[in-house]
Length: 202
Image 1 (cartoon, rainbow, N blue to C red):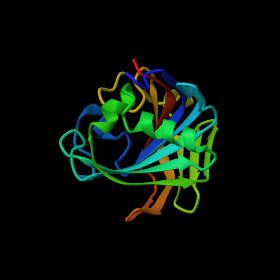
Image 2 (cartoon, rainbow, N blue to C red):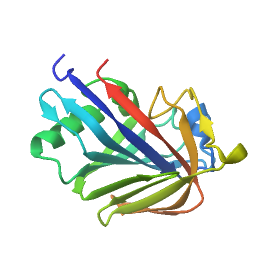
Image 3 (tube, rainbow, N blue to C red):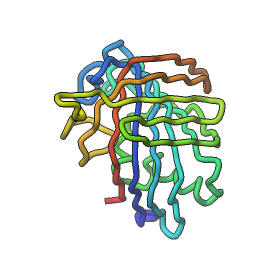
């Protein structure tokens, strides 16, 4: 299969409008009846064929008008403006699902592509917080919920997830603001997750 020589490793986080912890990962209906989520990936090390993708970022704004497994989503993609044309094409091939692997499973739920925008992406991981700025389009910050003894609250082996194989740390948003592609979100104290991720074609 063309394009099947690829692998990505890095950090992911998301925030949505559900109450924490988001029931969608347990294959239940979203707590607000619909789901609006911003999902971001920072690639520590990666390649697509001979194109290196180290240090790049990509994010999706997702709207699911109902149960995420029962309806088609509308999705807008934000690509790191640092990416060359070859790198941009590689990221789109992977995250659109064309190159197989777990992104293809996620992409199978998408019914409407709203657009792709190249923006300055600032992705930060600092202790128990994760933050992201997408140019003038969006900014989000989440912080891990403190569990027993101050330990992280994690969800393992969730049946519906962005980063299989890793426990997801459960968090709440300090803020999630997004205004682009017809979306206008202003949320606080809602669900967040973060974890490492590892994707490949197989």
